[in-house]
Length: 277
Image (cartoon, rainbow, N blue to C red; front, side, top):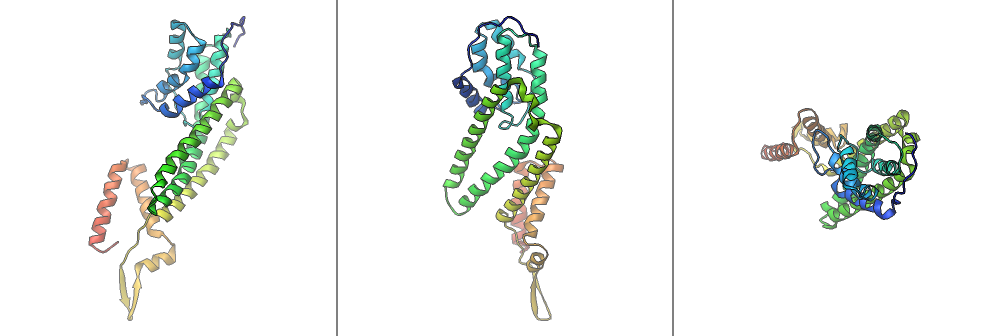
């Protein structure tokens, strides 16, 4: 990056960054496709800043075109990338010689590490914990369960996105030097969060998956149930097996959610008729 005589450019205000956050919150997967994934959503979210920095039609068009390249990251934890790029765009608009390739290289360098942390933390752990509370309320017949989940999810996501975008804007290109983004730190954090996510999923499976068998037999005038034997081996053993089977079919056999739902209903119905479950 080479410095040129600075041009007068407008300040990016908190109001501008709020507009970016609002767009990213609701449109982060808009026009998503397999070729360039979140490219349109990124450009659309950054548009309030770009309009302010590039009032001319040609300059604005070039700026939008610059961001219509492949981009894909976790929407919440990855939000500092948008703030950092907004800061870099302001530097470019002020006269610094920053090549388009440099801006996109920064995006490419950041999206992977942030996605690794975000997918483990936000999608797996936080979402599962919120769902556990909501499902507990819903199973008790409380209609507020899904309502509270939706409100809490949007509020937390908004807070994290807003904080991330503002932090990214303050750091600018220095976000690349964050200690959190070193390979060693990412590996440790991801491993820890994956373990936490597995613990949460295991707890949810044991709590909300109800599966037992009434199969029994009499031996020496003493009735023995298969369920008591399974419970002696491991409580909630059948729910664990079922969750494992569903995961296997989804992960390795590419079964869709609807196919798995239908399979579950059929197995439950047939098992009930045969008095297996």
